[in-house]
Image 1 (cartoon, rainbow, N blue to C red):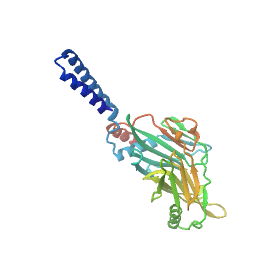
Image 2: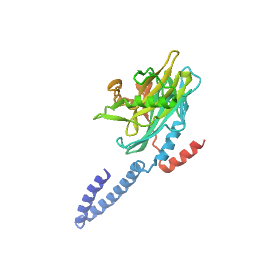
Image 3: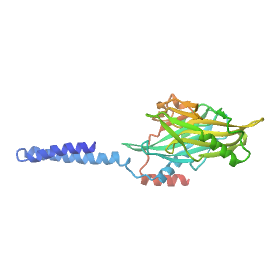
Image 4: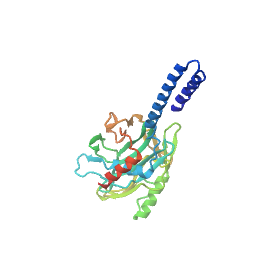
Length: 319
């Protein structure tokens, strides 16, 4: 837009110069006005576009994402212990197909089992680079989530029943063989996101996180991702669950995108999530979706410029 305005004003400016002998006073007044407008456009352009064009390194942004993740406080209803944030991200991702978004995924666990996923990622606009928080509950209790002193989310209990997988046999007795079974299960999964046109999701080759939880009857488990590029749209828990009688495999899918999603196993649809574009909130605790087990909201603050951001994360992460 700045270029178009400049081009139009230059044409008028040149026509005035050509006729300067006939309208010298008018021309001089007009020239002064044009120089003032040009200076204003340059200043406004630098203020409006400098931040979006700033050179943020992925490493610096990942430090910022960790800083943001550490500001979350999680309170699970009916429990004294809170899920513990793992300080290392379980995934750093980038998506060239979605405005070059870049993000990190963190997991909060309790007694070994994942209970909350925090995904923090960038998006660029004409007013600079901002970031969004994506929150996924993986616990069968309501919880309250606070970020930097402000309540941002109060989801109801997540659905953890899952689907039993029978065709790979009972879970093996060793961790190595159980991982082979988990991979075999995931290789039979087909994921789709219903964008325009729909896109097929690819299985990331490595599980994002592996765990056990004796108190929850989980002999072995892992989080796998179905992704567009490396940007996860569906997360899948694969768990070997044990009760008094036997140990069996279960899969539990979770949405990680607000567009419609589907997961198939051996060609059979086993899970669907409807498109809910309103899940992308412009701020925390906006209804009616603040009670959903999946929630995305935009932080109102811009990401500081790289020089300021470097100082911020160094101070905050050292504390």
